[in-house]
Amino acid sequence: GGEELKDAVVDHLKTKAGIEVEDMGTDKYYVAAADVAKRVQDDKSTKGMLFCGTGMGVGIVANKFTGVYAATCENEAAARHSRSINNSNILAMGGLVTTVDDAIKIADAWLDQEFCAKPGAEADWWSPEVEAFLSSKFPEIDSIEQDSRGR
Image 1: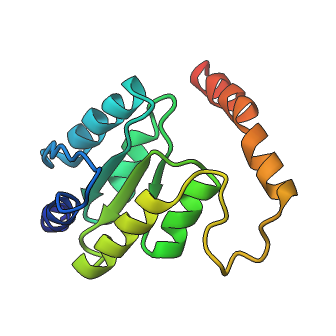
Image 2: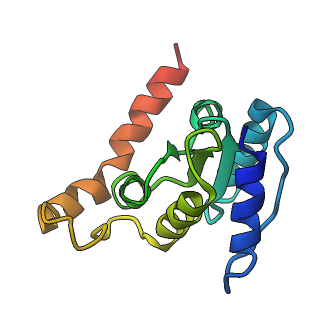
């Protein structure tokens, strides 16, 4: 699964200034995903990273928590877009589909990207209209999420 990938990314992040890393383990992937999602849900300034075989299982579990926006990313562009467009607060990656070198690049890209900010020079589609849409979409998304929980 994702434990080796998690260990490598954790070791890398511990070398970066200004980043506080708490390794919450891997346990059963769905328990680890729930633990991280609860932490992010309780503290809006916290970001999390999750790891399993594909990154998809942990992402699915994490996204069951209100206010959690987990994104499974397999490349740097997806990581940047998940932050710039969707304001993802959890990054999910998989040890079966992502190399250690790629995971470190993905983690760095995700952490460096701000929400509602152009995700790299190649984003020629970015405009003030895109920024306005992105910055105003969350009340409607929150309403959809609340409606889904009432079913």
